[in-house]
Every structure is written in C-alpha cells, then in structure tokens.
Image (cartoon, rainbow, N blue to C red):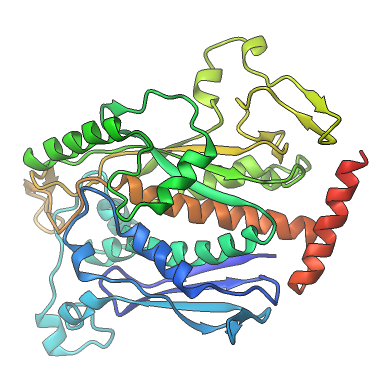
Length: 391
C-alpha cells in the first residue's frame, strides 16, 4: 500500500517527506520534482517568504542511480530561513535560546493558533503555527511529483487551473484538459487562469486586497486525464475514491469545501438534467458519455471519464490589518498577531492539489494493479485494459 507522511516546522531546519510502497524501477526526474516545488512558490500575491526560500528536494533514500528501488523514499527540503530562527526554535533548552523566544500571544482568527493552544495546553501559539503553516505542503508537492511521474508511466496526467479569485470568476463552466495542461508551459504562473482577460481582472482583485491590508481566496479546479475505470470501490465507506479525494484536497490549508464534477449545481436541479447518459463506441471498444457532471466518479469508482475536482479556499488568515483577538496570558482584547504572509495563494494551492490527487490516484492504482517492480505493474495494467476491450 502506498503511504506517505511529512515532518518539520515552518521555520525549522528542514521539511521532511516519506513515501513507501512505490514499485522499483521508476526513473525519477529530479528536475521535474524541483520544478513542481518552484511552481508551488509561484503566483501573484505571494509574500516575502517566497523570496527567501528556493526549494530543492534532496533524496536521501529509496532512489539509487536515478531509479526507485522499492524501499521507502525520504526527501529533505531545507529551510533557508532557519538561520534567522535557530535560536528561537532551538531543540535544546538553554538560557540563551529561552531569551531569544518570540512567543505569539494574540491568536489569529481563522488560523489554528487558538484551537491548537487549547488542544496542546500551550500559552504560545508559536508551537502550533509552525506546524499548521502551509510551509508543510512543500513536502507534499515533492512526494506528489514522484506520484505524478509514476502515473505518467500509465498515461495518467493531473493539472490545475484557477477558476475564481475573490469576486472574479472564469465565465467558462468547462475547460478542456489541453488548455489546462498548457498552463504548465508558462514561464510565470501569475494566477494560473486559462483566460488572459479574466486573469487581468483577478490581478486587480489581489491588488485591491493588498492595498486594503486584506487577503483574498478563490477556487481552483483539478483535472486528471487518462484515469482508467475501476479505481476505488463501493464495498466499504473508506474505500470510496470520492471520499478519499475529498479528504486529501480538504486537508490543504485554507480549503473549506470540495466539489466533484458539477456537484454543487447538481444539488439544485432534477436527475434527468444531472446524470451522464451512457453510449458505446464500437470503433474505440469503450463506453462513452456526452457529459461529465459526475466528475469521472460513480459509486466511489472511476468510470473512465476525466476526474474533475474543485476546491474552494478561504482568504489567508494572517491580515495586515488584523482582526480582534485576545492575549493568551492576560486575556485582554488585542489585535491579532501579524507575521509575514501572502495575500493570495489560490494558484499555489492548485499545485498542492495536483500533488494530493496524484498521491490518492497512485495509491488506488497500486491497490488495483499491485506490483513490486514497474514491469509487473505494467503487465497487470495491460491485462486489465485487454479485459476492458473484450467486455
């Protein structure tokens, strides 16, 4: 079974990522992995931290001479900002490090600060925010890049684009995968929207938030092309792929809602206008659909159509014009703490979403086709495709 986890704090020495269960024999494109990390740092409206960090994935285990060897993969991403925090966040307890402490006593509304302090009995939100920070997602993106390299071996690709930033939304309901994938060829991500005119209006929305000391959220869409029918299961609640995808995407910081296909609009109309009719192409020997309102999933199982997931992000919780809060020690009313932050993170969240969807799909793919080495997985997959053609 494909499993992954991460470790590390926002201003700690490094972020670590662990991935086990990947077959041996997958060639790892290190430049591709680092390019994904670079994409995560891009986008209009990012904060000063992005100017400090230049993320590079260091593979410490599980890859030898450029190929996976079937053992757990360990990736390390160093934090360049550690030099400014190594006394503040020192591991050892020494008088000089205690004096350098920078406690955060005014929890930010919308952040994990207060909830985490209550949970862990801290009177300093520093220890909570360091892990709750979206900095952790750099590790997910590195692992997701490896998962994407695996999926590409079987013709599966994942791409994202921004559908809305604040009050500005793309007019098109459906965007072809080819246009979304083409966004990867851009030198600069900007706001990762397929329509140039809409992107200009999105930039103005970010500019407005910046000028007013505010932040702005939005919506991104993920599309996975080439996903075969049959991934996931309807046998148990936790085996349903739609549930796994929803959890994975919802786990991205600031995501507050997840939609599969046109799920939100579907809830407000009749079944005759929602469900995708079924046809059959004898020339292609496969079942077809004239529409994809289900988003490529029925009953928790992929049906062979494009997988479509949308995520809705709240605005970043750290504001230049802080909201009201309470001092954790004195309990007096104060303004919430402000730390270096972004104004808009929607494009970067889309890159993280790509990684999470790729990891979920890679796990579901290996659960169905198995294989300790890539050639074995490929044989099992090709046999299944032949079974589908003869159905």
